[in-house]
Amino acid sequence: AQSVTQLGSHVSVSEGALVLLRCNYSSSVPPYLFWYVQYPNQGLQLLLKYTTGATLVKGINGFEAEFKKSETSFHLTKPSAHMSDAAEYFCAVSDRETSGSRLTFGEGTQLTVNP
Amino acid sequence: DAGITQSPRHKVTETGTPVTLRCHQTENHRYMYWYRQDPGHGLRLIHYSYGVKDTDKGEVSDGYSVSRSKTEDFLLTLESATSSQTSVYFCATGLAGVGEQFFGPGTRLTVL
Image 1 (cartoon, helix red, strand yellow):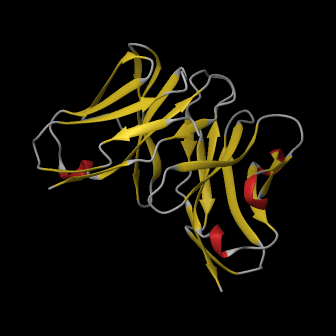
Image 2 (cartoon, one colour):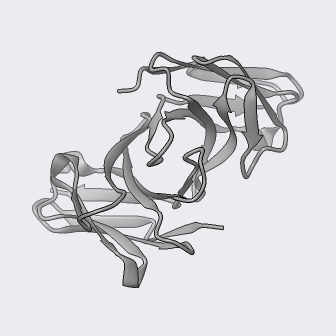
Image 3 (cartoon, one colour):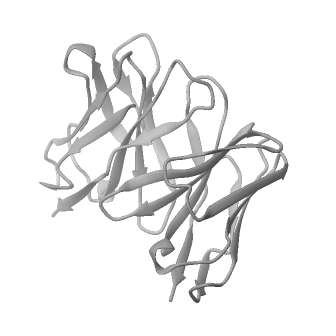
């Protein structure tokens, strides 16, 4: 069974600082990988995804993530944090070998951006 | 935006009562999912559907049932609500292939 680990349930950065949210997965074959963001009292919104091809993926709002097969990681970064980035972020994986597009989610990382 | 609505958005009920949550989509996506979100657990899959009248269990299906009589609607039923089912419930839809899912706004359910 797949699993997703997000290191750090809470991350706090200063406005303008680098954002780094960590995600590691366990899977027998490289899965599809996703980052979602959830703002308070809202549903989840897709930030970016990796399916195939270039391992550095760019998403919305200036975020990007790099798939590293050797490290089974898919860390999310943003060079300069903005107050509006404060939200909860979820890493998720989907098994390439099964239909149904089932996602396994990490437990989430709450990002706080300090002025 | 995949055009997903959930109803009701908020509900307070008592232990032992039946509850039905509705998810409606306008995108004609084949797959639909119900998740619950609890602090420290992320999102956990309750049930999912891969077509009309085709459903399967997720990782936390005990105490829940689902039905899908048409493409656009996916119902989640708690036959006899318990306090442990107090949670935020999210519906999602998806296409086959790469696994991306689109989420509704959620339903906050409180079981007293």
